[in-house]
Image 1: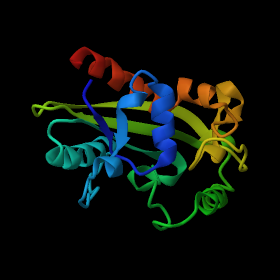
Image 2 (image 1 turned 30 degrees about the vertical axis):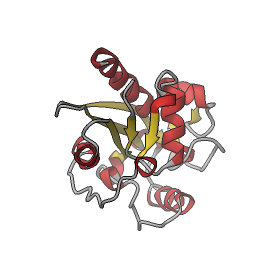
Image 3 (image 1 turned 90 degrees about the vertical axis):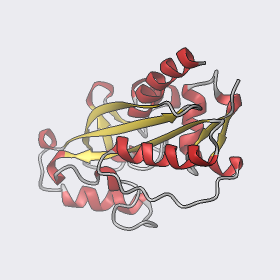
Length: 198
């Protein structure tokens, strides 16, 4: 099987990828482990554009390998879609998520629950040897909770409330979250296409 390079330095994303796609787990290495040296300017206007920018930048250095990249984030309707593609850099590159989550809750303090609709979006881009590439997308709908709740997950999970589950994604077990999450949906769609290729 070909080596698969996952364009991330985020250990949480790598862990989730390995949980969602156990059949591929042994073949997946990070871009750092592959020896990628270069800067990637994520200047796309959509999650799909940013994911492809990452994947193609790495594929240019490793044309024999399969390269997977994802770009994901939280889109809050009452904030005009923020933080959107800037989710990781929202309120400053090094701002901890505890602070980001608290500020979002503050900004929405006067907004009633039914108007606090939001979604997580994940776009996955794949560059295959020989120049083929494709993107897939997954989303999960929810609301912004009125408080921070849950110890699991990462990022914005403690404020993202899924009504059907009656909990935030941070309160879910990894299996529960992966079954319905934006990244789980996108990665499974990507795996189907990758299996057909392999």
